[in-house]
Image 1 (tube, one colour):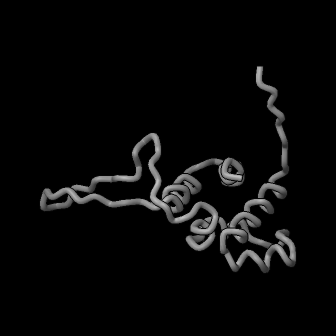
Image 2 (image 1 turned 45 degrees about the vertical axis):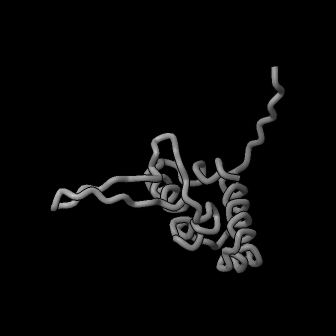
Image 3 (image 1 turned 60 degrees about the vertical axis):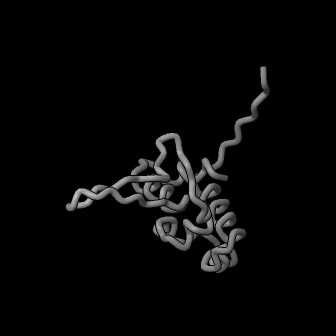
Length: 108
């Protein structure tokens, strides 16, 4: 049987690691928060496009639900295809989930 070690972190610890990852990936606004502490940072920053692009990236993704390619039918009956970037999909999921910090922790 595989030996798995479970590590528990507080929401504050997760939030700090999330900010660190986004900064490492180019989120410049987060550098200020790391320098002066994440205590004063608003949770709302995780819903910004700039943060999400840095945290998840702009690559197109393919999920089990195939949300990469979403077909839309317009009023004239034509079907158009829209492509989603990874950060767009994850922002949508973040808004819909009950615990955004827990959702972010999955990607650390």
